[in-house]
Length: 339
Image (cartoon, rainbow, N blue to C red; front, side, top):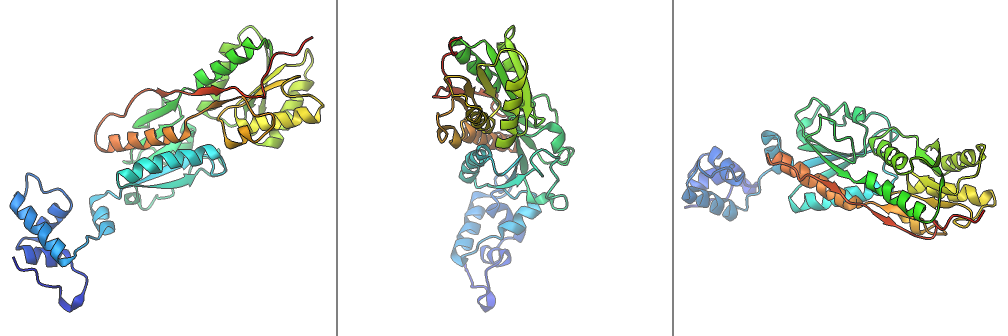
C-alpha cells in the first residue's frame, strides 16, 4: 500500500486516505466513523486506518457530526446561574459527559421562572439532547414536540414529554425535617414556602402538611431571596395567636433570611425559634448558628441525568428510582422553648 503525501503540503483529506488505501471515500467514512462492521471487511478497515495514520489524517468532526446529526453535545437548562445547587448539577453532568466524549452547554431560563426560549431553534443539529433541572413542565414548551430527547431532573414525573426522569426524594427530606423538630418537642410551626411555581416546592409543601397534620402550621410564601424571606418571617410572626417555635423553610436562602429577621426582632436561634433549610448550600455552614437543613446530592443528580440521556440516546432504559436525601442537623434547631 502506497501512502502518498497530499499535494501541495495541504492537510490530508478523506479523498487522500481513500486513494492511499485503494477504497472509496464512503468506505473511509464508514471505517473512521466506526460504522464499518458488517459492511466492510476487517482487512479493508485495517488498511484504511493504516493509511489515515500514515498520512496524519484527522477527520473534520464538526462536519461529520452535522452530517450524521450527532454532535455529542447536551444542553442543560436550569432556572438560574446564581444558585450553587445548579452549578453542582452541571459539575456532575459534565463529569459523566466528558467520560463519554460529550460536552454540556449550560443555559438558564430567563429570569429563573419564565418559559425557556429555544436557544437553538434554527440549528437543532447543534444538540443531541436536553437535560432540564428543577423546571416547571410548562416552562419547557419550546423543547417539546422536537426530536431531541428530554431528561427532566427534580421535576414532575407525570410529564409525558420527557424521555426520562431523575428525581430526589424531597418528600422524604421534608418528613425528616418534621420528625426532627417534633422529636425536639415543637408543635407550633411556620412554613416559609417558595413563591416560585415548581413541582419540587409543591412536593415539599405537601409532604410537610402531611407530616404536621393536626398541628399548628402557618404558611407564608416568599420569593427566593433574603429580603423576601425576612419580610415573610415578619408576617408569619405577626399573625394572631401563639408564636411559632419552628420555622421550616423551603430552601437555605429563605432560612438565612429568616434567621436575619429573627435577630432583628430580638429573638434567638434556636433558643426562641428553631429554623431549618433545604438544599445544604455553602451558606448553610457560613451562617451562625449553622443551619439544620436537608442535604441534596446535587452532583449525583447531574451525573444520573447525563447517564439517563446517554441511555436514551443508546435506545436503552434509564435507571429508575429516587435519589436519597439526608438531614444535616446543626445549631439552628433546638428544643422547644419553655413556656
